Length: 179
Image (cartoon, rainbow, N blue to C red; front, top):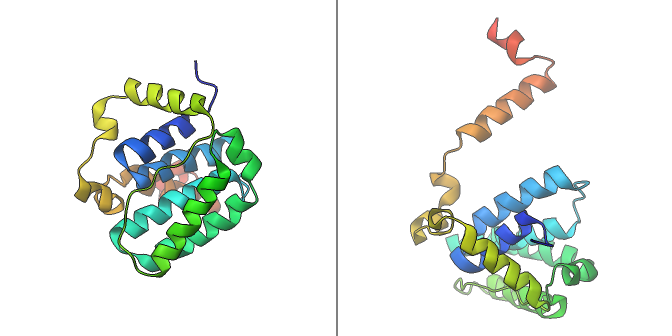
C-alpha cells in the first residue's frame, strides 16, 4: 500500500499535521538506528536534525536551533538525490532551511514550516497514513509540544540505558539482580 517507509510517513504526518517536531525526531531516529547503517551524514539524520532545530526554535533555544539547522543543512546539501527520492523538492527545501537558519541567527520568532514536495505520491501516502492514525497520536496541545522532552514518560528510556550500561560493564540483568 505504501511505497515509502512508514516511519518516514509518520515523520511527515507529525511534521505537517500536529507540528510535533519532537515526535518527528523519535520516529525517524528509531528507523535510522534499526534499518540503516547509522551513518551520521545520512538523509535521515538531516531530517531528524531539521525537526530538532524546529523544536528548539519553538522553545526559544536559539543556540540549539542554530546548531541543529546548520548541521541539517550541511548534510542535506550533499543528499539532494536522496531528498528527491523521498519526494521532497530539494532545491526549495534547502532554500527554506537556509532562510530558517538565518532567521534563527537573527533571533526571529518561531513559525511553523512545511516541507515542499516534488512528488504528489508522498503527499497522498502521508495523508493516507495520517487518516489511519488514531486522533490521540497526532493531537497534542501547544504546551505539551513545546516541552515534550520534559513531560513524556521516560521510564522505558531510562530502563534501556541502565541495561545498556550494565551490558557494557559485563553484567547481565540476572547478575545485577543477585548483587
